[in-house]
Length: 525
Image 1 (cartoon, rainbow, N blue to C red):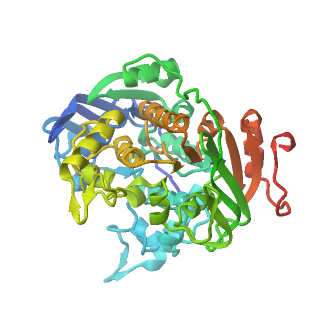
Image 2 (cartoon, rainbow, N blue to C red):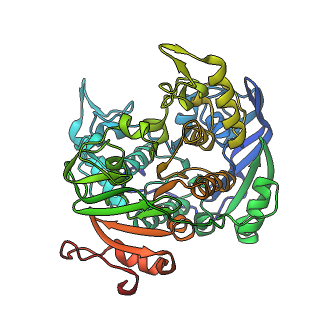
């Protein structure tokens, strides 16, 4: 039994010569688009096979076919040499295939333990064996190196802890094939390294792993082979040791490597938005003062849970202040509201597009215009100007390269990167004087990043004030004119562009215990 201890009777030190999983000539279409066109993939026992490609390349659809969530229109999936019944999640699960999706599948009102054993509860006669499940959950958490109470409600855990519960849930099923979809999105470097150690141990025990990521460093750190998908086709499968970042980007996008980060002409003008001596009523941050001027991109950096997202919400009126104030174009606002900020030209794009940014069962059009329906260009009294709405949304979606640009398609049918484009569309459907954008590129590929960074460049050079909240340190290093650092809810540093460096920012992540107001500047960093 591997659960809790990860022990198998016969460890496999090297990848087996035969394939554990074979997906052969898989074909799949959805209305209006061919998603997979004859894609083949094999995974060996004891290897990490990276699945790489742009958002919309077909990765998620291929995974869902392997899991039995979708039935392919052509091709077969074999596991251990046996054909898996098409469209049967039960067959895939019984074969030992487990998955950790980027979008969590936990039930917030249940405990961590209950989520781990959901659908696989242990029983003692007719009763649930709560003690056995709690002990096994605690053993898995101990092996993962995390201190989570098995009885703690999932709703009270951090995003990173919830991700660990999802991983524990997958491991409890004693998997022979583990699929990890962007598993480190919410992780710090320490948590990422902990996961990599678990992956290495699973490899030693002969578990096959499909690893989906857009982070080049992760590919080189743990990948054995890599398959690149583009436009629903497998372009190549290569040894990770025999490729590099430039080649992977070229294979993924079909074009030569470009500079990911654009050169932005910063022309700071008057202060557009600011927090002064602000503390959140929730306690997520204390005594924070920041400002953003028109024509510049200002960053907020910090580890997960440092309070940086709460700062963004407070500027938009979604997080109540216990002290301090918001200033907008020189005017003090003690209790701003999202509607008043929208009316003043402030647009806020949240970090979790699926839970906070989109209504998944509604169309692209409806999601794009959610914050614009009070504008006269879209409505007349209680009547929508349907033609004007369609024309405006179509122009913006063409500009953002949504693929496919179908206004009536539900956003749930799109990849993560395309969903993020629908969120970004809101910044172009109304006059945006201030853009607050939190984690804009989580789970999106290099090509989509190029497009999003180009959007920030356009808005900034057009005179908008942009606050970029990001856990992605290269974004902060390459895109910002000034950067603030938060640690444990307190502001620990402010750096000007020439002072921004990886070493300076990282040292500020752990700068705690200072007196209030003792903020680092570049020379002191």
